[in-house]
Every structure is written in structure tokens, then in C-alpha cells.
Image (cartoon, rainbow, N blue to C red; front, top):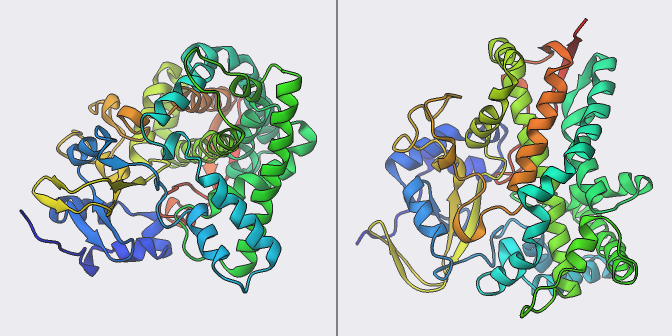
Length: 433
């Protein structure tokens, strides 16, 4: 049995957690060093064991009874932030009330942060809304949204593809699916930013925190009313589907569960898909040969999306909490401790992938962990994949080439070590003639 050892400073992991710009841009050398030399090691910065090998992470994901998901975002989350705000009487009473509401709702864990048997009950109640058949029914609407946004971007010529495509596209899709009217889109954008800002970010200032919880509370107010409305008058949207969901022998979703579920739909259906599409476009903008190849054979786009999911995991990692003592690959993990599974490291494990750091047909796309595995396999993975494919098809069919205005090394990334995505991608789109 090995003894506890701490991640050494020279790995660069502390710089990544501290959100230093160069570490955020390219964390992969750090992941490789950890994987080779410290595959299971303790991080004082996270107060968690950091796990980087593919097989070790699979072992964790396959045992939800041992590795609880109750704190899947760990200490760098909106809920953890709410705990600190409630305990700090220097914040305005309204902000502390908003944070307290978040804490109360978090006591009803849902999907990504719930454990069996509740997780299975919740998933059964909503899984049909995200099935391949349900996603297929959404394709015409998703395609229309993508083509409208792409047409405007191509017509403009010089655009920031993040602000003008990768951000508004998934946001519009999930808003329409949830039945949010066009008039609410600007505030919907604020809600999206609020719920993602606290994930993997440790440096929010006081004003940012106050704004964050005001937006969070506004989200809860709006959807509390919408849930009641769908109970009275069902509509043809996802919100109605989950509100009205009933299965014999299963307790219906409570209002608190529904609100927490909607937060997850917002983040997973928006932020992570935005980041996936942005990563796809960043690679294509820097590789004209790859772009031309995909334009010549659009059937290759799905495999390309899988490789980008692997290489640029939108969710770099997640936490689990030990429900009992456990020995993982010779390392003793005590009950109550947390582990941080770095999916992005596992997705480049040379023991699993032949070309771990490159887009390649040699890699088995079924083995990446970007959507998790087992009990918590991502509910929205079919929708995310389909959105990314439709987005790329819409753009690539309308342009000759993408001319980047900045070098890849000059592109900045989100201020998070958990959610990976670019903040801007200024380019010139050369339309087909």
C-alpha cells in the first residue's frame, strides 16, 4: 500500500488550479506528467486526490456506491460559493438570501450530483426526452437555427465565431427546447453565464458574486412560474415533458428537483456544447488541409467531432467523494476524501489511444470519457453530438476557407480548470461563390 504523496510543484498543476493563463491554454503537458509519474496523487490546492489514468477513472465511474457524485463540481462550484456567501455577513442580505435558496435547492441532488437509487429514478423519468429518437425529431429546428446563424456570420465576413456562432447557436437551441420566448434571450444568456462562472473558477470578486447570485435567483423565479404553467397548460416542449413525466411505480419529480434539473440542462445543453463547437472550429481554422478534407467528405464530420471531444474535453474533469475506505491501484483512499478525475488526461492516455495527442483515425472513438461512463453517462450526449455535427455541416457547406486573425497560441480560454473552451475566435469567412 502506498503512502500519501502530494503533487510536486514542478508538474504545473497548482498553476492550472490558480488559473494562470498559459496553464489554462495548454494543460496537457501537466496531465501527461501526472499520468506518467503521479497517476494518483493528492492536491493540496484542491484538497482532493487527482486521478489521471484511463483505467483508474473507469474503476471509479463503475462504482457509484463507493464514489458518490453528491459534490461532482467540488469546492469550485456555485453551491460551494453559496456556502461561503451565507456564512459571510458582509454580503448584502439579498445576496445571502439568494445564496441560501441555492443551498436549499442543492439538498435535492439531481442527475449529475445524485446517487443510486434516486439517480436511476430521476433518469428514468426524463431519459426519453433525450433519446436518439427525440433528438432526431429536433433536427429540423436545430438545422434551421444553425443555418440562420451561419448565414449571418458568412454574410458579415469578418466575425468572432464564438460571439457570432458557437455561443448563440446552442443557447438558442436549448432555449427553444425549453420553451423560452425570444424576448427572454438576453436574460437567458445572463443565466447561462451565472451558472457556469463559478465552476472551476476560484477568483471571482465581490461584485461578480453578487451579480451571479442575483441572476441565479432570477432563473429560479422564472422557471418556478413556468413549471406551474406547464402543470396547468402543457406545451410541446422539453419543460412540459419533464414536468408531466410519470412512470408507474416511480415518484414524480418535485419542484426542487425540476429546478435543479433545469440548471443542468442549461449548463450541459449550452456551455459544454458551445465549447465543443468552438474547439472544432479552432482546429479547422488552424488546419486548412483538415478543413478541405471534411468539406470534400462530410461523412467524416462525426468522427472528427469525437476526436475533438477526446482531445479538448469540454468538461476536463469531475469530482467524487469516497463513501468508505478504498484501495485504488495500490493507493489507499480514506472515506470522506474527494477525488478529482481528469477526463482530459484519460482521453490522452497512451495506454489506450494509439495517437493520444492528435486527430487520427487510429484512435477508437468509443473509448473517450468526455461523456463519462456507466451510471452517469451524459444524458444529453446525443443532442450535443448532433448539434456539433449540424453546426459544422452548416458552416462548411457555405464557405471556401477560414482565415484566422490570430495565431492559435494567442487564443485565450475560459477562466476555469473544469470547463474548457475558447473565449474568442476572430476570423474571416470566405464564402463559396
